[in-house]
Image: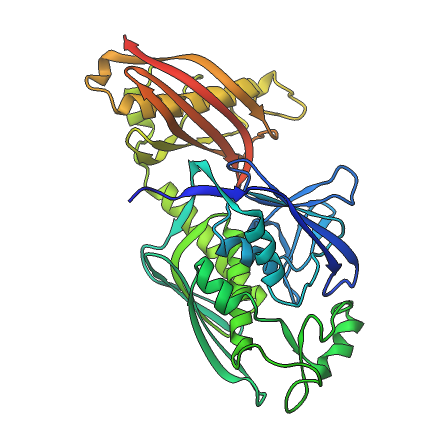
Length: 429
């Protein structure tokens, strides 16, 4: 079975409305994005339109919703948007916002799901990143607890318990597919007790909340004019929140997540653990260490710029790591007051990773060497500084005889720092 490919949307779509917690009128616009962009919120109302990548490292608050921030820029209540994005298998998307919270819609994910589905899904020419779970583990955060087990697909099973006659103890289990999410999860609305509303508003929350965008509960039922869409709408919405918060791992998930009394804080704790385990797995299982790399490449200090290879698919894809330290010789003269890795060396390191991918497929590789013939579409996105670890992912675009065309992307902490297309040829030493 071939690896899944990355997806974006075919065309922009937008919607306007009031933020659930901020009460601010805002416009949201979904925009297609190139491969390896990830999901990015863009505050178009702020100077410079700053980007806030939807990554767990950027979570700054989890009070009644998940808030992301980079610098002074913030975006509140991202989980409903992200749950729809995940359910449709979208990997790359820019979410433009004219204020600091998406429109609430009806309090569910349905408005975002409908917009994205109407925009259409477009497959892209790059493999999707998938986090898989090899063995069960658990995470606990106050009353919330989670067990994550290996699975061939993505499934979320949720249990909640509230002392209310309409809720009590509820359980729901859902595979995260477009059809199932659209039918069983997306329409489920957020909810709160009527007795909580005044206290929430005193804390600056629920400023835009109403029975139009939330299920409001009295002591015995719902406020007049509110009808439940499902008898267990409450556990379905909590499942929606889990899916949205776990989108912050920055990759697709292949796992069975079992959540007991989940909340945003616990969901984010689980996302952090998933990311940490994925990074540890990559680092603890090098396919090629530095000694082995030295047998493949002719480079030596100070121009051997690859420390290890952690993923490899023959004639398809390779992932290599470069640890950047203050002891690098080029920092002595390259912006010494504020050390920045030279862009040409970032591309050189990327090319060395690509060279390993090409050489591994060759017979009598000790008699071969890789020369690069061309570079195209080279872009540097952000500076690389001491302490960074660059993750280079290089994939084959085309192989013809001894010539190979590849595309490489370098990232630091999930942020793209450089990308390029490369043409190389294998020749005799």
